[in-house]
Each structure stands twice: as C-alpha cells, then as structure tokens.
Length: 324
Image 1: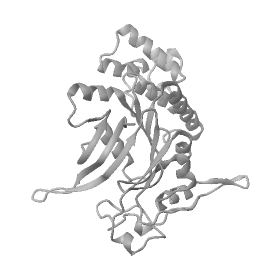
Image 2: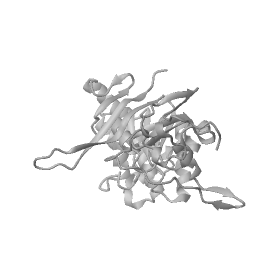
Image 3: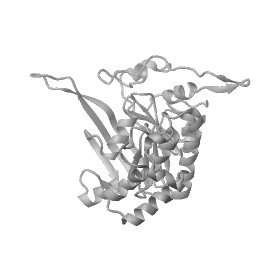
Image 4: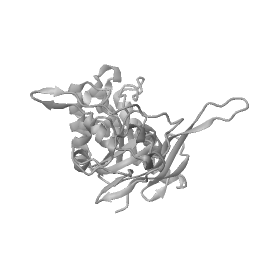
C-alpha cells in the first residue's frame, strides 16, 4: 500500500549566528527522517522538547523550507508537483495547532473562521458554505448559534473544537495535530481526545499527531515514531511500543510517565542528563551520553534505522528485548 503522506530522508536546517564577514552556521533540526502515513492511520510522533517534532510537522506542510530529502503526497514530490496539485494538497492536509486561541483570527466570527478555508479554495457558494459551517459546528459538538460569536467568547476546549471544525471544512484526508491537548485544562483534554477518536471513526481521517502526552498517544495512535535530536530512533505499533520498547530512549520516556499505584499517583522516573544542543551533537549515537547501555561502538558509529521485526524499526546498536 502506498503512503498518503511521506518523508523521505527529510532534513531541515536553520541558520544560526553569522555576521558581516562570517556566514551563518546551518544547524540541523530534522536529520534524515523517513516516515510514512497511510490513509486512515493515526501516527504519533513523540519525544522531548527540542527533538524536532514540530519542525517535522511544519516541513511536511511546507511551512518551513526543506534542506534535503523529499515530502511526498499521494505519490508526488511536493517540491516538483504542478501548482494545481500543490493547491489540492493544501486542501487535503490541514493542521491543528497547539494554542487554539492564537490560531484563530480574533477579528472574525466563528462562522467566518470556519468558512475561510472554503473561500480560499473556492469551494461552494455563500449558502452552501453557511450550511457547511452549521454542519461542522454540530460535528464538533458546538451549537449552531456559535457561528455568530467571536473566539474570545469561548473556553479553551471550545476554541480547540472551533479549530478542528476549521481544519475539517475543506474535507481533508490528513490532519496534522501539533500538541492539540497541551494548552487545555486536564479536565478538557479527554473531551478533545475523544472527539479526535470519534471524528476519525466517522470521517476516515488520517492523523499525524505531535505529542509528549503518552497517555493520549496510547489512546489515539496506531503507530508511534520516537524522535531524538532531529532523528527518528524507533517506529512501532502502539501496543508493542508501550509494552516492549526497543530503543533505550523510548524506554526512558515510558518510564518517566507517572503511574497509579496503591491508590495514588506514583511519579515516574527521569531520563539522565539533558537533550544535547544541535550546535554540538555527540559523535556516534547522539543518545549515547544518556544511555546506561552504551558501549564504545555507540560513541563512534551512528546507528541507522533498521527493521527489527515485523512492523518495527529501531536505530540502536544494542536494541532492548525485554518488556516494560
């Protein structure tokens, strides 16, 4: 089965420093990522802050320039596809951002916000757009009269529902959700998560979810990709990832999640050290300074992302074989 949205050896770098006589240094934020999203699939990308998750999402959307590799949509390279195909991709791939208030234009009514993608892509008439707005408000659990109000009149959870309705307006195949729960109160997060699950079941959406919330990932995703310092270090099915992580970094992320024990919340562990600066990455495996199982080989040789078993790949010289 061909992928719907794919990164092939994708790299993104940003200029840092430089001056009158000295050129800026290119610092990698995403390094040689290979990742594929299938139609109707929910794929989560996890990792610490600074691991490159959001930059990857923005590169897939064309919001940041690509330094190397390709973004493929429906079998076409987005860098060379005709303008008409690029416009179609922009309609088929929509994004939901972390901050629901910052992503909504405060000058527009909710109806205007949701209808805006339809106007941009020339979809429908004024009457059909109005009907589509009412349909979408119902789909995300908001009353029809919300269309005449403004974003500041809603709670954070309601604003995220509005952002979802806007993303759904042009009937996309893919929703890229960048930390869609982290700006919300804990009591609201489960509501939005359940809405995402329901929408996927009803519409057949594919999700690429960027998240550090592993409980939400476990609830929504089919597969999980772990990123560290700009590179994907493990890809596996969600149940396999949570019960039998192969990369020590993935195991460390899971161990850090608080658990319930003896009727109370038990704090999780912590990964030793901090994520290195991309300005001075460690040699060899970039995770080796924080890895208890690192050997001399790990400090010298960069591990490649290789198949480990059916449906799983890992970039590690000494993959784990036990269970959490």
